[in-house]
Amino acid sequence: HEHGHGHDHGHAHARFADRFGISSFVYSRRRPFHPQRLVDRVIQNLPAKQNLALSEQLRGSADAASPFACLVRSKGFLWLSNNHLETFYWAHAGNYFEVKKHGMWWATIEKEEWPADEAKDIEAECAGEWGDRRQEIVFIGIGMDKEAMVKALDECLLADSEMEIYRNHWRTQFPNDAIRTT
Image 1 (cartoon, rainbow, N blue to C red):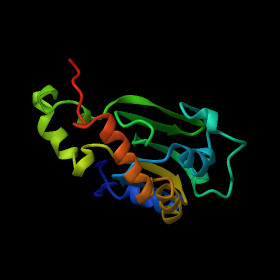
Image 2: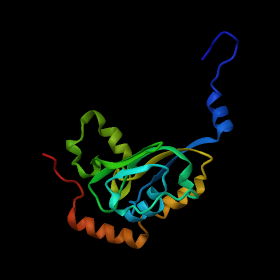
Image 3: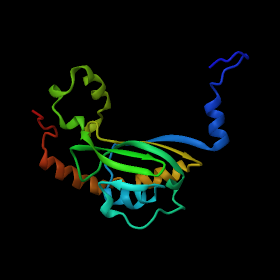
Image 4: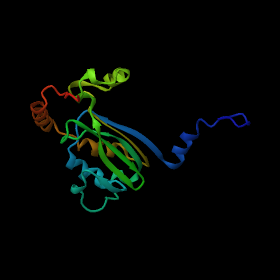
């Protein structure tokens, strides 16, 4: 923005990040999380009071040495291996954290039932055999160790052998993947 003395402040965000160590990154993968591993290795260690569908798996307090202890905010969408049809929304800000059902994955809905004005955008979100299913979470924190966070998150994904079990189970349950909503 301009305010009369010949320079703008477009670089202010970069200075703020440098000065305070605030950074962000998007974690994106096309493989489901194992819910218990996600709770044990990530959710349990968020600097927040948990309020989520997976709460029965929680144990004691967060580990201050966890790479997730530095988070200020995180939000996005989850693909959990125990629910093939629905997407989950991850919301974390300060001391608040919640995972809740958000809606159906577009891949579970017949294409002719997609909103016509959004069909191209929806199609662009789809990739491979699982359509739009994915992990997509943005993390914002102070002094984050992105490598350690990504490693912990990746360890929560289904392994290749688990992915084969997942594929066989859900292909038996929903051989065409999509279901009719009408």
